[in-house]
Length: 119
Length: 110
Image 1: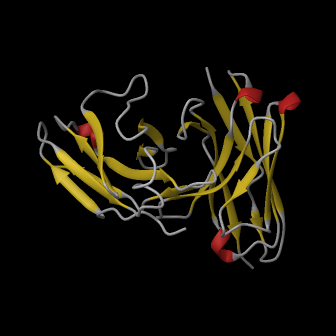
Image 2: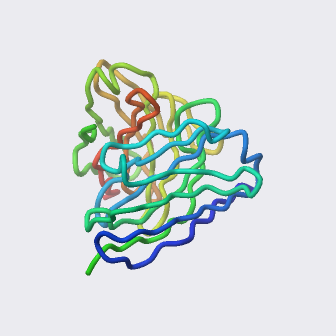
């Protein structure tokens, strides 16, 4: 069965950096677009980044453009999110998700990893 | 990239129907047939319930249906059951592989 497991969430000071990882299993990772979505406490989800199946195309929300970098290693079935210049408003649970494949929709989600930005 | 607009709450008795609206613009909901709906129970990840406006993934009951008119999409849950009590979020493609989400609607089964 499809599994997505995020890791790397932590408490970090404003201005700091963090790298999130997402390990995928149960499907051919290299066939699918992958995304990162975050959800601040008590708020709705916010899409933050998409990456194409080969890793050559990346897309970002304006709120993270220039600070966050999405990448993937298809040989390791892994998705990454490098987060720099972190701000208090980046505090959220971060989910990785797999695209439906035939449409722009997020079919499988991980359990999420919590990132807290605070001094 | 403004969020889509949803009512904060909706409710219905068991067996009744509830409809949730999601309003966007011609640059997102009105411009593409890529509207999705997600169900989220407390402490859990969102679950895809509807995609491409009205399609249901495998395993989603046909009590859940979606539609769209202009810049507004809707999710209807018919024959409400206790397990349908959850937060529901709409989402729309907004061009250039960007997605927008709504603020969420809390559905309460009375």
